[in-house]
Image (cartoon, rainbow, N blue to C red; front, side, top):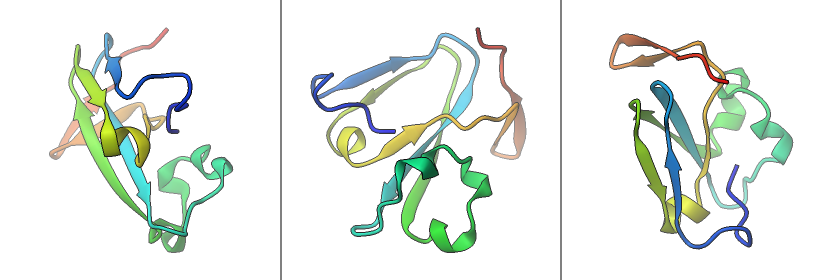
Length: 100
């Protein structure tokens, strides 16, 4: 998702109080925007053809981390945390902490 422009100012801070996770970012190529229903699918479930229309970056967020989204990161890239029980970071398996 991209956070609603009218509900927030130019910068968004996100504080992680739980364990580590991967946040994924997507930027669609111009003219290839997918419907909102695509964001409901896990990125791993998409077929190869649809994945050619966007850039994807995965960012490791350690426990107790703070991320700032502003400018292009705020307005041009969608962000979300995939539903995984574990994440792979530099060939290491990182287990997700329980969330409430």
